[in-house]
Amino acid sequence: MTIDLDAVYTDLHRHPELSFAEHRTAGIVADHLRQLGIETTEGVGRTGVVGVISNGDGPTVLLRADMDALPVTETTGKPYASETPGVMHACGHDVHVTCLLGAAEQLMAARSEWSGTLLLVFQPAEEVGSGADAMVADGLYDRFPKPDIVLGQHVCPLPAGMIGVRGGPAMAAADDINVVLHGSGGHGSRPESTIDPVVMAAATVMRLQTIVSREVPGSDAAVVTVGTLQAGSKNNIIPSEARLGLNVRTFDEGIRERIVSSIRRIINAEAQASGAPEPDIEMANGFAVTVNDPEATEKTVAALRTVVGDDKVIDPGPVTGSEDVGALATAAGVPLVYWLLGGEDPAKFAAVVTDSLMDKTIPANHSPDYAPLPDPTLGLGVRALVAAARTWLG
Ligand SMILES: [Zn+2]
Ligand SMILES: [Zn+2]
Image 1 (cartoon, helix red, strand yellow):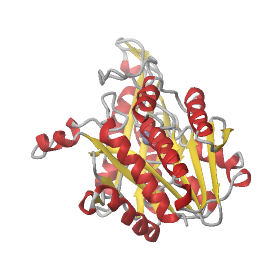
Image 2 (cartoon, helix red, strand yellow):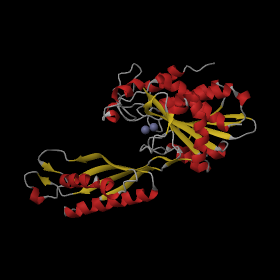
Image 3 (cartoon, rainbow, N blue to C red):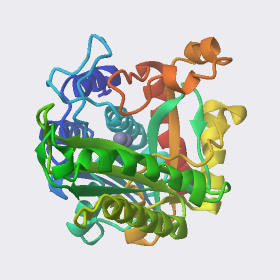
Image 4 (tube, protein in one colour):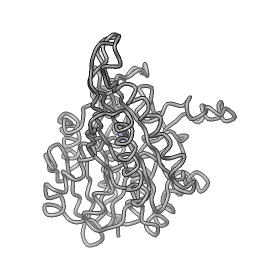
């Protein structure tokens, strides 16, 4: 049997499912694994799927793919665009699932060439930062062999045929912070009788943008984004509250704590400046820093070079995106190597290489226009997983 990776990919892309609702996807994964003769367990961490290939003595290698999609309305115009309104594989997790199925087939077929145990982990709910934890909490390492190494990849807007990987802190910690600014509502014609939360919110947003530029050392990377700002219902009504949704990215625990404390200070101070009651500041879901083990990364990079060529494996610098794959390695107390798989048409880069707006004109993960090239991305993603796994297996 040979899995038709293109067909799997376009099918998954047409039918995206949100975090912890990956029922159809998990079913497709489990069917393929079972057809390959791989011992398969569904419902691990709610919608996760685990395949185990036990192939004699040797190390245990965990290969991970996340499965969930995002609440985004697709605008790529691709013939295989999402058929589920308001949901899209905008982060490319359908690429990850497809590549891991392809790698499972190849590694299963090449069993006589390696020894050890292969753990194929199809993880739910990466986008909300809790799928890896859910699988661990559901006994991932009690019910299945504990790995010696955790490996995985994420498709990204590098040119197809390139791989980005970095030892040490590779992807950012992410924290969501939800804020409610309490004012005092009233008629739009009589602002003197109100405490206007819209003005308070505007001042707060601008002041928050001074944290990274004025309080974080130039040598440290960090991002503070106000992604949601909601207030009011009608032009002539001053509302009684405003809501802000913040997202913070950092690569260092000290900087992370300092930024969160600055955010609290500024929000409270702006409320005080307005004569408003104390705001509500709630820490919501978070991701830890994704740290690649430097030695294990070096060893894995050698394998990845054999797939795309020596000069095509680059250090992308610290990536401000976040991931929960690290939780799988941390829970097992073993090294992680997580790399970025280029998925863009290289021609796009040639066209805009001199354009300072390059990053804005090539749609990236989470964009409604994000559309990685299935060919050669899927094939290279399979080969990267196989080569990396073979480096660690006996
Ligand atoms: Zn994502
Ligand atoms: Zn993702």
